[in-house]
Length: 493
Image 1 (cartoon, one colour):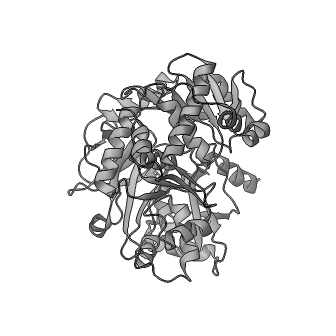
Image 2: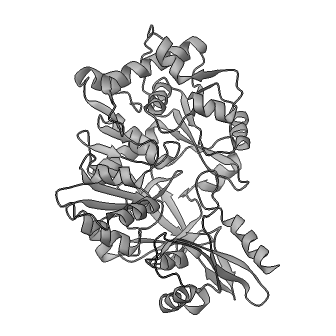
Image 3: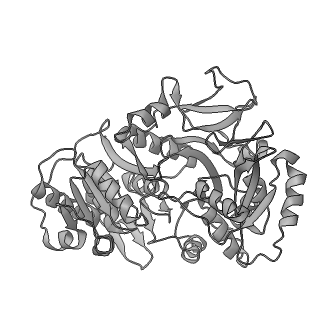
């Protein structure tokens, strides 16, 4: 069946059940969600009879975003969320390259960006003026594309990746098996809905008839209040969010009665962060998972796995096979670093209008996004870094992520990024960029150097440290490592 196809059934069986809860106390029931979806679909059908329409969604974290998303995908269309943080040239690039049939957005987003498109619709006007005079049968679309998301491309422009219904339906099943949540849960994912982690959590929640708790943007205060008041039973977040929450948690009492399930992804949690979370929510469950927009779920760590292999990203999810390949394509030995190759039914369908990049990722023996890692004798997977981030110093491979992980173990460090810069003697040498925690008492590069030397081989220790107030980011929210090179070059002049 297609994603969201059961919403009509939930609206009939549980019309007053909250589908979407909001921080201002407002809720959207399943009946209201279904009626709003039908209104939006009526507007689409009046505008075009084209099948498989691509609809640009131009709004922030609102209930209307999710209503539009489900209106599109249950008609067999493709939803294309735009990031409010994109530059105008990024928006123009996506509009032109993806050939949008319709754009629907909030007045604020459309006025701020000045988007020009022949079929632009305001969500407020649709919900106010359109009467539901047509109900298209929601068909099954398992093999059809439903979502065009974006990640950072090598050119700096957003790069579109495509998903079909089946890949996420399979991912929903796998997530429910491991994380153990269902229709009676309230799921909180306070990141941007234009990014795949929060969008996945929201769509999964509504697909199974659960409640999604929607925040307009991540707020550590609001998120913590929701968790401490036990208003959410499942929390999806990234380590930077969790670090922000932990900074506020220090004066709070343990939330012993809260059985919250915390799901973290995007990077490994530090040992200290994991320890603090377990102390704060002793009866809760804590999961970390490794995956990607292109791969979906790959491997996970729960409490038992963490005890056995704390530095790993755990074991593969059910139905996922992981292999480590050497450069010649042969299988690597245990504990030998190579390219991480994934086989599963959860994979993406390819990059939009980019067959060369698609072929580089989707290969005959599985999919690889260029991550490097190794499997040990017990089947635990450890990621050492990205092939594109690796550099060579004195003939030895250095993976920046390994050094960054060590630096972020320090209480005073909020974020750390390591890059390789040119050096006449070593070829390249590691340098580190540090963002201190706001209330950090001890800010010493010498202390960081000593700590690195105690935890890493000397050749991996950063030669130089730079302090930054904020890191530059790409259009998809990742740290723009290339831009950091200009800081070094500027210092050397």
